[in-house]
Image 1: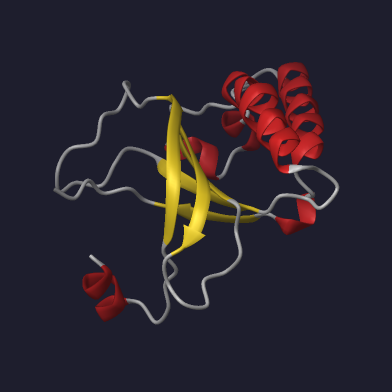
Image 2 (image 1 turned 90 degrees about the vertical axis):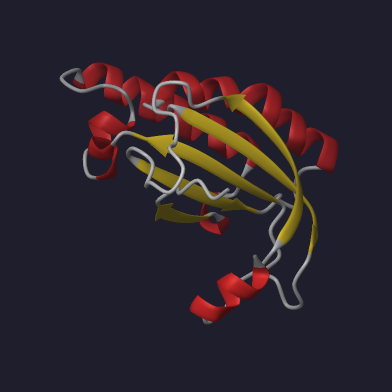
Length: 153
């Protein structure tokens, strides 16, 4: 896999992770060889120095996860805690989150926050999400990428 990626990418980083999947994609299951429905958002996280490791994990897994699922139009949510980098010079991340959303969520914040046609729900969800994120991350340290998923067998 590394050789295939290296042949098409100027740079890539690989990590050994522990994966948990609090929300499985049962609405839009991926089909082999086809692009998955919607888009996959990848968030690359760094643990703030202000938190110990156990506190950071608890805030993320136990506190934030239900908030993320309840306040967004997410149909898949995967948490990858980085154990170690596998490639030399890999960027220093502590976690990699994969979240899948419907296509409309890419350009419509109300769709992203599961509040189409309901401005009050949008504001409640946005406020709740931002407060939750602030408990376990420093906002300026998050890298976020919109991607597509393909099932490779």
